[in-house]
Amino acid sequence: MRDLTCREVVDFLMDYLDGALNAEQRREFEAHLAECDDCVVYMSQYEQTVALGKAAFDRPDEPAGEHVPAKLVEAILAARRKSR
Image 1 (cartoon, rainbow, N blue to C red):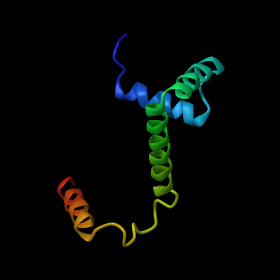
Image 2 (image 1 turned 135 degrees about the vertical axis):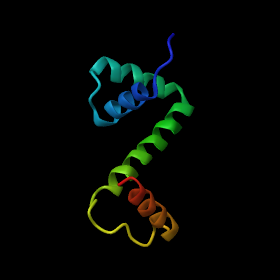
Image 3 (image 1 turned 60 degrees about the vertical axis):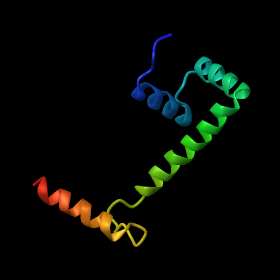
């Protein structure tokens, strides 16, 4: 068995979540999930992370809001100024 790259893992999991796997791949993966509690937990956390990431970009042009620490905003602005 060869090692998978991070990109291959992410691409596969995103295809699974998006319903883009072919029927055989989906069946085989779901058969594994039916037997592996660790993978079910990982997939649940991964799905939540993806959902939160997508929600963060629902309105990308609106101000970030008060939930972003002021020091983080300052660091981002300083880094952007240096790269120009």
